[in-house]
Structure formats: structure tokens, C-alpha cells
Image (cartoon, rainbow, N blue to C red; front, side):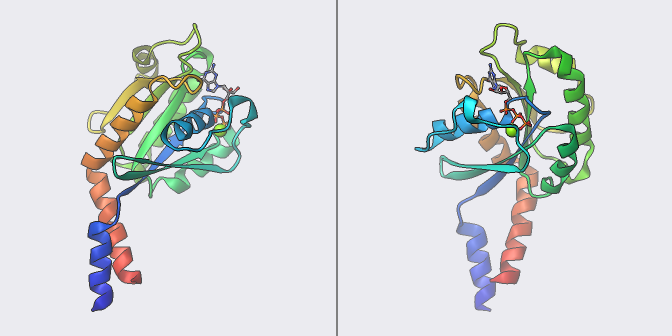
Length: 205
Ligand SMILES: Nc1nc2c(ncn2[C@@H]2O[C@H](COP(=O)(O)OP(=O)(O)OP(=O)(O)O)[C@@H](O)[C@H]2O)c(=O)[nH]1
Ligand SMILES: [Mg+2]
């Protein structure tokens, strides 16, 4: 009986923790963005861009925003590593998809990788934030243009937005985090994941 109440108490009062998956093809700038985000939202210095290497495993970044904990999972985007992405879908509250807005020759690859992500049923209802990265470069196209290039169909029921960002100078990072927190708080998927975690807690308390 105690464990039942303890489980319920934990479910109702523990600080919300959201899991955000950062995806995108290799060199889109995912890890650089994560390091910038960490330095903007915590006392920790993020790694400078010249010390960041292509991701093979998983990078984790934790921040706290307005009484909410965000845990970012940054995965490698090289073609041979993309099959690992789906292992994280089930537990993710939202997806951040990073596009190198200064490299149109890779838009096609970026589009097909994203379409595959969106087709996966384990990500049903997850809010989607598409980042048009590297805005510090003169040749970068706008978030609207990235949207036109990606030309995503069947997004009607999904909560999504496009945002222009730069992992170098931090443009758009605050707007991105605000949008994520707000969307995840309102998301039905969050309710589902919370209920599932609550049941698991009750089971293990
Ligand atoms: N100019 C500019 N370059 C960037 C920016 N973000 C990343 N880069 C550069 O782009 C390259 C790839 O950056 P990463 O952060 O390693 O890219 P990634 O998406 O994590 O790549 P994988 O881990 O291989 O999937 C590096 O040379 C970065 O310095 C940016 O905002 N502006
Ligand atoms: Mg990386």
C-alpha cells in the first residue's frame, strides 16, 4: 500500500523532466548547438567548436528552464549511425531536427532522413522543431526557405515550427528552448509518457 502512495506521490510532485532528441545528418551542427545551449543555460562552459569531433556515441546535455529539466540526447548523423536513432524514439518527448542552412547540396539527404524519422510510429505526436542552422554564414538560407526545400507533407497534425539558429553565435537558441518547453508542456504525448512513467514508478516503488 505504501509503495502505491509513494509511486503516486512521485508521479504527481516530482519535477518534470523532458527528453529531447537532437537529430540531423552529419555536419549539420548538432553537437556545436548542444554545447552552445549548455553554456547559455548552465554555469558550465560548453566545448568550443574547434574541440568538437563527429559524434559516434551519444552526447547528453542537461539544463533547467523555468522549473523544468530538459535532457538533450545528441546522436551521430553519419549514414551508418542513423539506424541507432530509433532506439531513442520511444522515450523522447520532442525532436529537434538540425539542417545546415548554408549547404543546399545536402538538403535532399536531410529531407529524406527527416521523412524517415517522421514515419516512425514510436515518435507519434512528438513536437518537431526544425532548425535552419549556421545563420552566421552569409550563404545560409532563411528558416522559411529551408521549410520550402524540405517540403514536408503530412505534418498537419504534428506540432512543429522552423527556427533560424547559429551554434556559433547563439542566434535563436533561447526562442528554440522556449518553444520546446511550451510545446512539450501542452503535448498529449507528454501526458502519455508521464502516465507510463507513473505506472512504472508505482510498479518499482
Ligand atoms: N559557421 C558555422 N559552422 C558551424 C555551426 N555549427 C557547426 N558548425 C561547423 O560544422 C561542422 C560540424 O559540426 P558538428 O556540431 O560536429 O555537427 P554534427 O551535426 O554534430 O555532426 P555529427 O556528429 O557527425 O552528426 C564543424 O566544423 C562545426 O564547427 C554554425 O552555427 N556556424
Ligand atoms: Mg555531433
